[in-house]
Length: 195
Image (tube, rainbow, N blue to C red; front, side, top):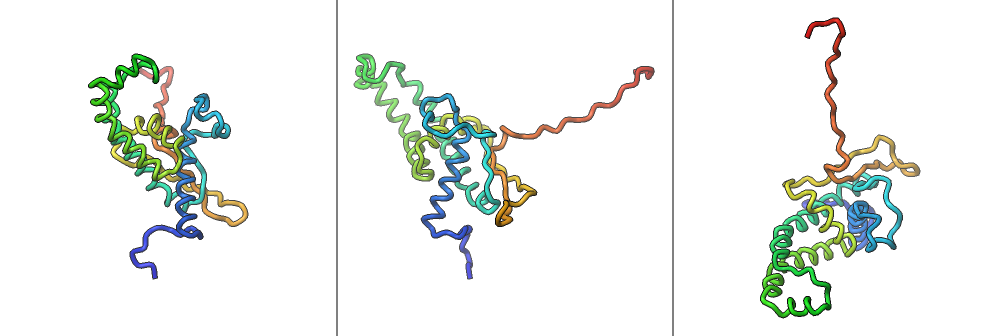
């Protein structure tokens, strides 16, 4: 019996389960990357639709809490990032101006203010295991959900099962980017009618 044992095994041992969930979460996050960015030049081609992956329904339901937890951690670090930017410098690293800033009181204030952001990034690297995914998460995804209290992803079940084993398929996507907008039908106007 599985009393109080949450989660699905997905036919894998625990290490393989964690690796699968990390891989799916990183795959979803990396679909949001900017393909022109030089940091991601070695990665595969751009996805068909940004912010969306197709997987089985059970896997989508398992990976969703991990993705939402990472977004929440990244989102909570945004105020600290903005506070630290007040003490930051625009000087190039290693230049004389940067070296003087590094020895100044402003650097100590910047260091104290940026500490929660560094801790949040390390926490997300621990959860996801991919530095490139964490960069995309903090730079592009978290700022988009600043005003949203939760529910950053949605699962849409597909009608057509997977070929081969007829597994239920689903789309896991970020909310807000691919939303369908319902348009109201306009009332017909007749030429001879009085307005």
